[in-house]
Image (cartoon, rainbow over all chains, first blue to last red; front, side):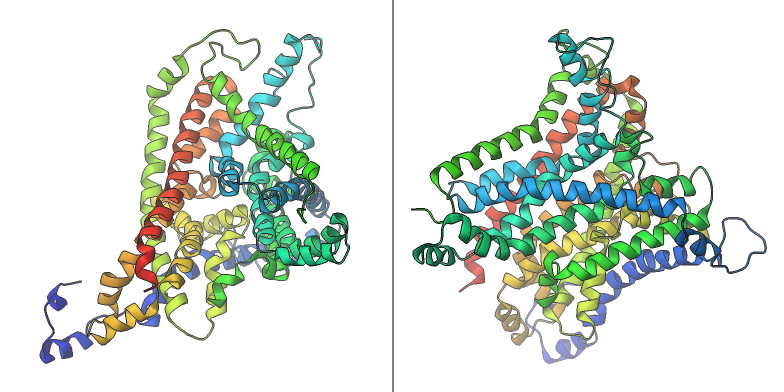
Length: 303
Length: 272
C-alpha cells in the first residue's frame, strides 16, 4: 500500500482513507477460504463425481451408476484389504503408544533437568526427511544389507542363508511405520502429563495410596486424552499409507493405499479408485470428528 | 519421597529412554558411516574410507535439477501459505463471525486428510479442467498442505499479543491495514519466519501428493523415490541423505531456537 498515511492525517485525508481497502472480515477470509474451497473441497467433489460415473476417464456416453460402490461394499477384495490395513495400522499405533508412554512419563514426571532438551533430542529424527528414514531401513534390512552382512561377518549366520524375510514383508512395513512415528507420538502424551497437577499425587500419597495405585487411579485416567491423541496421530496417517509399503513392503506388505495407487495407475479404473479413496476419507473424517476433542486442534477454534 | 516415581523406577525409565533414543538414531548413524564406505553395497565389514559418493553427488546434474525444482516449489508455496495463513489467523483471532468453528476446521483439515486422497482429488480436478501438471500444480497443492501448519504457529502468537496495542493505534487514527503493518506484523515476525521455514520443510519433503500432480517435473523426493527403487545408485543416495538430513535438522531446530529467542526479546512489549 502507499505511504501517504505516514504523515499526520488531515481531515481530508482521513475521509480519503475510509475508501481505501481495509482488513475487513471478508477481506481477511476471502483468499484463504477461497483457496481451500477451490483446491481442496471442490477436488474432493470431483472424486465423488468419478465414483458414481458422472465423470469418467474415457470420453463418450456414460451414465450415473452406483455399481462401483455396490461392488465395493458387498464382499469385495478391496474391503478385506482395507481391514488388513486397519489391523496393521492399529497394531503399529498401539505398539508405538506403549513405547511412547514411558518416554513421556520419564520426561514429564521424573524431575529430570533439561527435559526440553531431551524432548528435542527425541523429536529431532521426526523432523528429518521421511523418505530418507525409510531409506535407512532399506539399507539395514536388505538381504545384502547391513544387518545380514553383520550377522555373516560375526559368524552368527551362514552367508548362504541370509534372513530373507527382513525386507519386503508386512513386518518391515510395520517396523518402519513405527520407527517413523515414534518420536512424534511422545509429544501429546508429554503435554497431557506435563499439565497434570502434582498436588493430586501428593494428596493420594498422603492418604496412603501406593505409587502404582495413584498411577492407575489418577495419572493414567488424566493422561488418556493425550494417549488418544497420540493414537490418532499415528493411526490416521498410516492407515492410508502407500509410500512405505511400496518401498519396503513387497507383496505381503501391500496396503489399501497401494491398491488405490494401482487403480489410478496401472489398471486405469478411476471409478473404483475414487470409491476406495472416498471410503478412506469417510473413515478418517469420522474418526477425526469423534476424537477431535482429544486432538487439541479444537483449542485453536476457541481462541 | 517423590510421588510419581521411585528412585529405581526413574532409573529404569531413564535407561529405557536412552535405549529408544539409540534405536531412533542408529539408522541415521549407519547412513552416516556407510556414506564414507568404499563399497557399492552397504555391507559389513567396512572396506575403507572414501569421499567418492559425495563427489558423485556434487556432479549429478539430474539430482541438481531435482533439488532446484523442489527449492522453487518450496519457496513459492511457502510464501503463498504464509500469506494465506496470516490472513486466516487474523480473521480467527481478531474477528467474530458466524461459522467460525467450521472455517477453522476447514483450514486445519489438510492436516488429517490422507495425502493419497488429496493427491488423487487434485489429479482428477486438474484433469477435468485441463490444467497442466507442472510447477503451478505442485505449488497449489503444497500451499493447501502448508496453510494449517502456518495457522498453528501464527494463531497462538497472535493470541499472546495484547490487543490494546492495536486498539491504541486505531484510536490514534491508523486504519486496520496500517495497524497491522506497524504494530502486529513486527510483533508476530518471529512466528512468521518460523511458519515460513516449517512450510519450506513440508514442501521440500512431500512425496505422496507431488507424485500425483508433478507431471513431468521431478522434485527431490520424487528423485529419491526413484533412486530407492533402483539400488544401483544406493551409495550416492546415502551421501545425499546425510547432507539433506543435516541441513533440515539445522533449519528446523535453528528456527525453533531462533523463534523462542526473538519472542523472548519481544516479550517485554506484550505485557506492559
